[in-house]
Image (cartoon, rainbow, N blue to C red; front, top):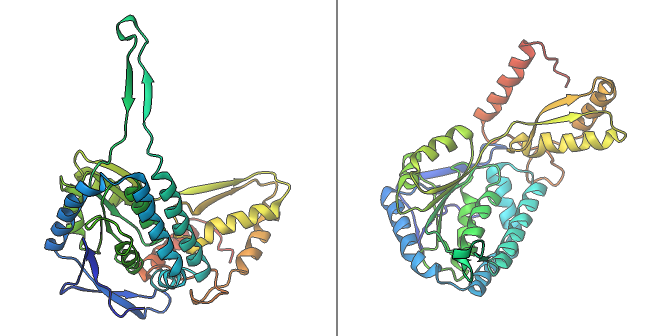
Length: 349
């Protein structure tokens, strides 16, 4: 791993005076460092995307597929380096980090195929005398520069889920990764910069929140896509203006365990959902309702399964439960547990 990572503006790798240390959540050791982009960098990235759009919107489907295939292959060649980067900066167990990389490779493969199928519609209009012998044609067009803001919990996949469709549909995209986990997005930038994508078609950089808000409000950005907390997402939507917006926000998922023949299966599914990446997933199981008829059977099985989860270094092949992303998050979870106990809950393990 590099000691410092520059950020990508158009086709230029830059650095600033504001260094950003990236620490391993497991031991708080410095993993590497990068830099916070400046206001000039942000403006340059947007302008580069505007210029790139004049080319990307004209790219034929086969060329988009070729570029996406090159990115897929680039990740495949460096898959273990990608996985280790995720494990180190996010604290995600290496076995899960590898799965995330595989998902990213698959996403670029799907995008490459779909880039050839940007279909429209042929619509008969002979629904009345006045419109007989007439038809309508519906065709899809690239929208323009896109801004994507991604979270820490899937620092590769939730970047890729924005980047791959953007390239497939002929749009330039700017990515602002989470400040806790920027390295994997910058590593992806290295691969994309070698893929044959139009200069300015992809920029990636961490930056201060006020600069991110400036990008969201900028009229040159035609679409904004965000994954993160509900509070931040809804606030950013308010300043996005008339541009197209997609929000993927936090959840409060629950499960109901009713009478079931295969109780062991239900236990394993609940454990996987509740403890994957230490529960730091938007669809993590946070509430569990168990039929009182099977409660006394379910709870001991559930606790026995929890006790088998191996905690430790995310780089260890045996680790299944890594750290929270930071101390603040751990304290927040602790406060929830304490609040529940105060209200009458029993701490079972």
